[in-house]
Image 1 (cartoon, one colour):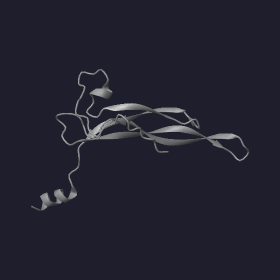
Image 2 (cartoon, one colour):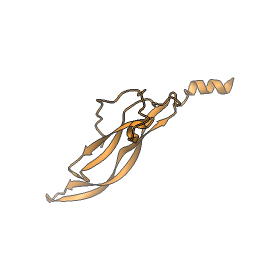
Image 3 (cartoon, helix red, strand yellow):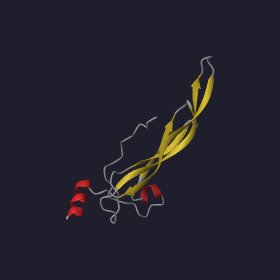
Image 4 (cartoon, one colour):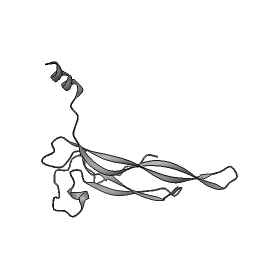
Length: 118
């Protein structure tokens, strides 16, 4: 099930880094905010996940990096209605982002090919 993205307060790039912050979510090169996904037909009903605040890394030593979410699969129980009108639970795995990390941009394949041929 895809997550609904809340985009208010989330920018394309974050230039200011709160280096002296006690919270790692603010002092990271890819700061994040914590959201809660609720589904009352699932156990657990609420799962906390992160959303990257920035599209680009926000550190003076990381030029051109992108903020990407690290996904994790959680084992959950989904409530299903059976043919006789009762409920059963089915174990499934749902993916949620648990961290934001700075990854380097990959060079364009065309530029990389030109470098190899010259």
